[in-house]
Image 1: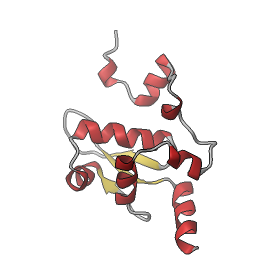
Image 2: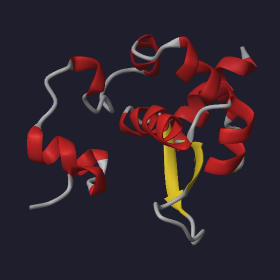
Image 3: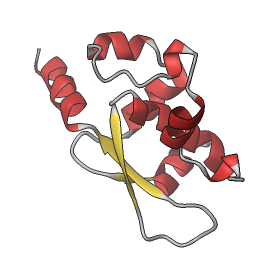
Image 4: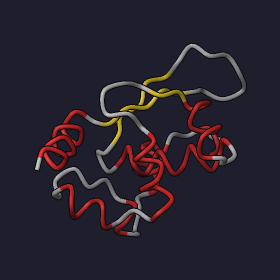
Length: 116
């Protein structure tokens, strides 16, 4: 039997399904629609991710003040919504660590907003 704590969110979705609409992947919705599904804490996290660079999970933990497991799940939802992408680092430890950046499509959308 697989320990659920070791499954990624995508594996959990594939295996168990997600009934709650706000947690389903939303890549086909417009960015304004997707942004309506995130709360103020996730909006602040999104604002801390630079548009043109990656930021490590550790840096986000320091800036946001969340414990690692809480931060991971908040960011995982942003990843599923197509707002950020993550890349696993070679940082050792009990759990994988990631670097995050805005998804290319969201970065283009965000830059378009700033240009207006």
